[in-house]
Length: 87
Image 1 (cartoon, rainbow, N blue to C red):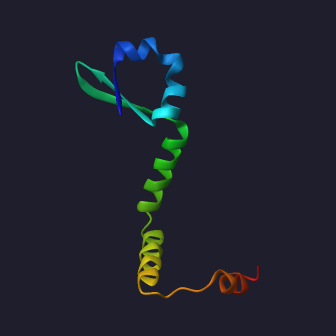
Image 2: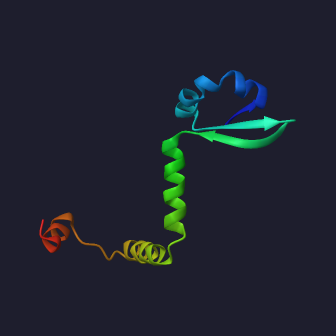
């Protein structure tokens, strides 16, 4: 992760969208302390979606059940899944 002091971030402001697309996250510092993180909008939306999923007990329960099923070998073929779904 790249670290920029706030003065340098201000100078590079117009280039930061491209830089966050390449580097994911840039830490901005003030007096050598991290004060903010810059990231691409796609990464930000992905993080929000992940937090939403993690905060939903029903979805997390379904995910844990699916992982347990997979670990126990309780699976079906793609052909069977399509058949059950009418696809």
